Image 1: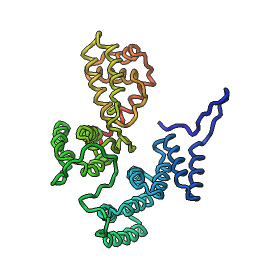
Image 2: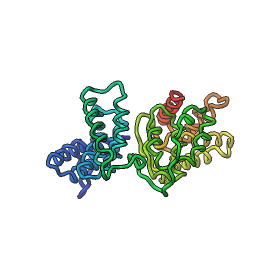
Image 3: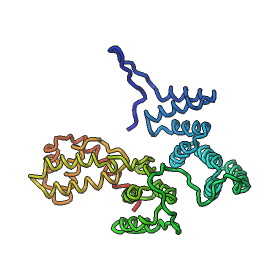
Image 4: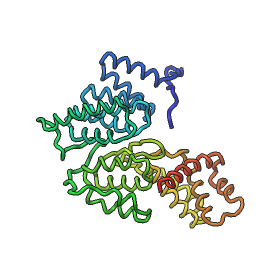
Length: 355
């Protein structure tokens, strides 16, 4: 949930409200950029991201300052996120991305991105001319001393961790995952376990950022990345937004929340109807895993415990008034259940549309 555009400051018993704090931070940061005080500007852009991690202007400012400071790894991670968001300045972001790759002397990667962009139908004449010029530049510099060799190309879209592994001799066939029915998709992903290396991370992240792929399949692939120690964190697109999943977090896949939800279900239902309780737990575990890392709304384990109990009951023959009875047992309001159902419907719709 986005934070309100104000922050509270407490001192000597007084409360002062700062309205439009993000706008103020942005204006001050931009003034620092004009003065070429990039370190101070980036600090303020970072503050904007602390207030709202989805602030695209803050992210763009952070990337520009990072480039000016020569911190290309940080800049590239920010720009890759921006490239998967809907912005009115996407061409500028893409130019910045190519600038980063050239500064890193990763001409192979730059050429790959240029070729991919030039194949798109909707591309402005100005951008096409710019890409042609940049392509010739990269082709001339590709073998210069210090240039990144083709087999060493690593776009650093994500932060790596774990031991180095031998590169896979064959490219991964992602159609194995994309074309399988749900029952076989898990087996298909597991079959990739010993083939994937860190050099496949750009391919993996492109799959995770693909709007056409199902949330459940993306969750299975994130689990594989975690199990194989390929990365500490990775970007993933779910339900209209790009998130950064922290794979080494104790709350990976919303585990802590799911545990709380299960405790509430068992407390209320296990003695009265253990079969219903177990089914509700299973539905809840499936949902919380597959919506991760999107935040669960409302953030109440009790509300979701009741929601899953109602859904479990509806899988059989519900008696009249059973929904109201379950709400009373869990002590939650109809409004909260409706709010949870909206998120659940969004998840169901996403899975159906990408089936």
